[in-house]
Image (cartoon, rainbow, N blue to C red; front, top):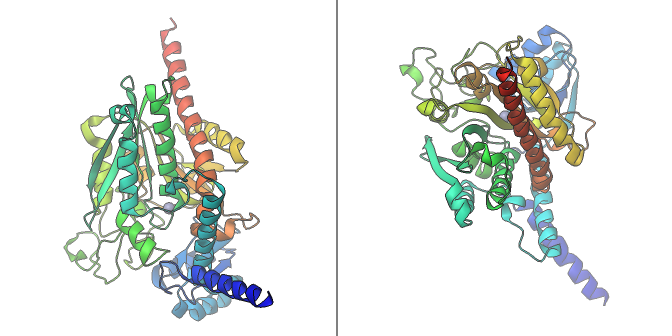
Length: 458
Ligand SMILES: [Zn+2]
């Protein structure tokens, strides 16, 4: 009896160890440190930017302000140098994790355990977009399946590509809307590769919207055609899924940038931060000219295929767009332009009110709290984002960047997962975001009605 117990214990232990170690990643992040620093002066802020530009330090917190905690990950070979410089300039350093590889594996392990548990407890097969962060191929299959789900989904959705990436992947887009829909909404996810919860949330919303297509009731889809690009940066995403979990940029090479007028930078470092590449006040703030930096803005504005594809699509046949929402993680922010500078657009009160409506509805689902504000005021000034371009050049009125869970507040129980939110969170994040977005869209319908009613008055 005792022998049997021991045998089963040993088998369990072997399986546990195996599943913990058996993720898709090599051990690239072994010895990478995650630290927290508190900048107290402008000089400190400058030093942190210097780290990002010259030491390949990867800032995880979107916030860069005096007296706000910042999380940064340090490559193993830079750890001692960075710590020494922090000490020299009087910046306090707290080590949150001295082996990033472990945090990645921990998140992966929680996801796998969750999947096993949920598949055991529920008899019907759970759709895998709710238990896994799907690969690019699986996302393409998912979109085709959704499009072909029923006669009404075939009639009321269309699936097309808005362009190809450097590695020749199609950037798939789905339109969902009933024939009466005359107004247009655009949403995208996954512009930053490592923010896995973002594409997962777009897939969740696509699934729910197609439920509504099958439903005969009048819905927002009678008013709006909703276009969703679930993965704007598929090359980066695939790379993050298989090689480097913390990859943020696309995968275009930078070894032939000397043709460009703006920055002649030849480098073996790959990739451009697409959300610094859009040509509206490009490179004015918070972006890097170093191809090895995570916030490298590219050799010139709009240099990247993904950027160009989105721009062409927004401009296409001068289609009128009511709103553009771009989903990132993390931090729990619902933010509006501008990002390039501290001042606000003229209509910021309207933008703020609608963000409030969306985030309050979102909060009612699971109690998740979002902060609202302009990008530069709430986070830090950074130019070249798709949001600023959509408003400044694309002339879309309601433009938002939504930073999904977790919170970046260190007191939040899940803050430490940062970009590695386990797949356990796909469903709750999807649920609340879908409710928030729908309520926001409904508010656009009523405000348009109010405007037309007031215009009719003598
Ligand atoms: Zn992002």
